[in-house]
Amino acid sequence: MFSFFKKKPPVPEIAAPAPVVEAPATGWLRNPFAAKPVAAEVTEAPEAPEVAETPRAGWMDKLKNGLRKTGSSIATVFTGTQIDDALYEELEDALLMADTGVKATQFLLADLKQRVKAAKATEPQAVKALLVESITALLAPLEKALVIGQHTPTVIMVTGVNGAGKTTSIGKLTRHLSASGASVLLAAADTFRAAAREQLSVWADRNTVEIVSQEGGDPASVAFDSVSAGKARGKDVVLVDTAGRLPTQLHLMEELKKIRRVVNKADASAPHEVLLVIDGNTGQNAVSQVKIFDDAIQLTGLIVTKLDGTAKGGVLAAIAQERPIPVYFIGVGEQLEDLETFNAREFAQALLA
Image (cartoon, rainbow, N blue to C red; front, side):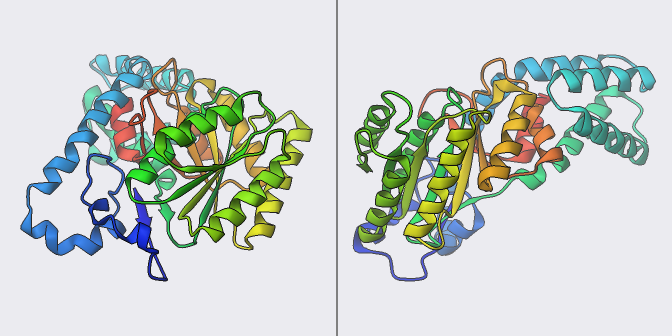
């Protein structure tokens, strides 16, 4: 779901790959902006949309399986025969157990009751379908495309607590950006964690992209050098891997603020995106992470990982209600293709499948 807006003619090495939009196998170029340049070709090849839907269908199966535990606990609420106070009470409990949070749960119940009344629903299964609509409406503000190409390079800072899947998500994102025709430069600014530089180097090798790193270097210095190198080499994207940290580690949070300031010195318009990777298994703690990191470095987007574990997918509803920062990607596995763009309706449908 990337859009490549080039105000200037693209450099030769990037302009060459015409198949960028014609590569549905990656599943990433789905937004209308990317589709406009080939609108005429679509009419000549009517079978193209069907091909593009295939990987998305496979993705939906993975998402449903990942959210099965959450969905089954909610679905049991609608196995009865009556729409009464008991149903809503059971639904409230199920939503809270799914880490939806108090505010989002209250919002969903109030919205659902209005929809049930307006639709004059009489069966619990009809209420379930209306709940999909309520969740979709709540999550819709989180659905936003990551735009690449308005700046050269587009500088993306990525952070998150240890174990959330930050570096792995950077590797997956690099793979899809590269496959879509973007030139990527990785910045190994995670000098805090042992072997982090080596781990990112492996991803750079796997994706055949360049990397800037310094053994024992200052994170902010690495970030500055990387942005400068990205500008000099005409890269489309500079991905800055920052140290994993807990929000309670104040000295590391201050370092993160410093990295942001230094990146801005290297490019007055950067960083263009500041992404937080959160583990879908952490429940309401994820909401706290979003709030603290956002207050510190002004987040522009989220990547939610590990929704295939014991994750309680309702946490996205809590985020939408309390700190509605766009969710660019969600992950349900360890494979390169197991990171996809977020779609509110798909998520709601998978949650209650």
